[in-house]
Length: 89
Image 1 (cartoon, rainbow, N blue to C red):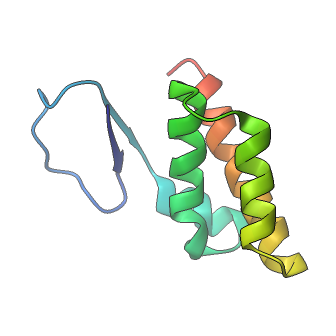
Image 2 (cartoon, rainbow, N blue to C red; image 1 turned 45 degrees about the horizontal axis):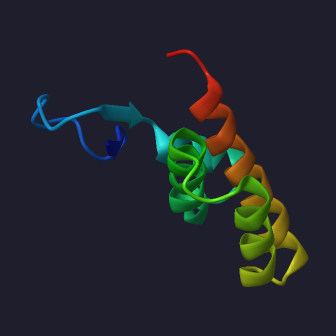
């Protein structure tokens, strides 16, 4: 699985495997913080692979970001990633 931020990478080898390309930077900007790019991608990857339980990942993010503002935007970001993983694209 290869996950690409299409806002940053447009030229890539198409036969790398299962490639997913999304505008993560744009999504993070809409959430309100460009710093959430990796959290959106993480939510997508975990939603697709189910390698970690959703509840465990949410708890880890809550513990990692103790401030209310940071916690709020990162919860939105992980939710967007999970939602993206469940969509039919």
